[in-house]
Length: 595
Image (cartoon, rainbow, N blue to C red; front, side, top):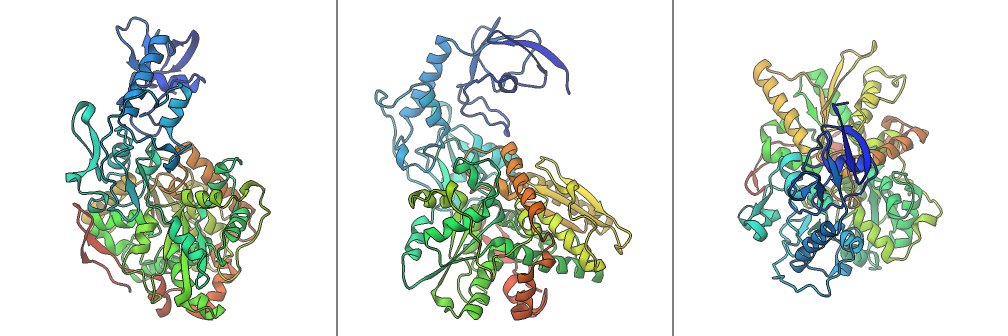
């Protein structure tokens, strides 16, 4: 705890850390100060002015999000003048804002809308100054609508400071400032890695996923199509909060029931292919570690990180696992293994995935993701899109009876479900790597040292008397942390000829997939931690907690793939990488091949 100071807010005496801003001190003590550009996980900019307060002895109101507390401060948050000023700011924003709220994807999740409602500000008497600008649809994953942008700067802050991608920039000055990409060439022609964190932090509907709902409805309603769906681990802990249930509650049974009512013909689970990923990736790790292969091995589950690596660290491509992500593994198997076992013709199958991640839309469209002979994953829906489909269909999600996924590729272990939380892939991998090295399971499957939503990189050494060598690992979530660990690896290799690590997990999004760019609007690191906790609870409750114990994974090797890293497994479940331009993300050349 830092140095404490005494202040007074609205007549209430408060002891708080001198490190706090006024808005932080107020929030800690249950005092509400309205904000718009402010977000607890970002550096405050003070750009909007909604959070102004009066401070005794100060000549004019101050922005509470950027003003640090001082001992003896006497602060007032609610006066007629402050309310009138806030209303004027809102009216100025609305005058230059597209207020077609019912058609906006952020409707009822919009911070601007909430503020206007709370302050009784309507648009009826506000003269419009809006000049319609074209919507940016250049990205395969993210849509940018400048007509809804309020220039709060949150998207720039998360893109540049947390993710270190710098795809977005500010142009113009004063009241004419607006957010765009370099040279205004569009998101799809920028270094954007499609992580979607800009969509999560945007307080309005200016940045959203590029929706594929109508395409999925068309497929479901087409009697000639056989529509198969898969769902990522993090989706099952984000649905509850959207339907009035406990935040972070895992709802796989209700999720499957909702999918059947929507009309999907077959329901598998990405958790199954997460277990399969561990078998492929664990075998790859041990092969490299025992035969002098390239180390460290870096996980490849996160497509935002993969594109980031291809763009900014192509020289480390040989360190990235050749394994496809669980989404793409299952997409390939849906059009190869499933037709073999079911008799359904692969050409009639439409493969749909439901993901917490906008970058999965980009990943599904990568031209190399066609090892089945077809596009392996046809459509990707975010969690937000899935929620909208449930509501469109009038399904009472909260009261649905629980159902099960279809058995061929629907069973999973606890190791698979924790893939959705930062550190989860590493924990799952270590559980099975220990078994592959020793022939025994870990005395306890839980490696809590790898858990927790943090802004720091987690490093650990897994040691046991039965291991032939200690396993040195690291976990990084958020691309800023990815950049730090990759620079460290490069320095170690340049200095010592090798890195100290065996295995590194990288997730593009802070908190891992539970905080993905396609998850419900309006979350912070605390919410991400709650969702991650729900996955760990499900892991604890499941009867099987090691990927190598999944009977359906054993069966697919016996019936189809033969063994981990077999020739067929490499053909269908592994991939290659490219070097991309830092200017626009375009492919320059291929830098790795399947082994």
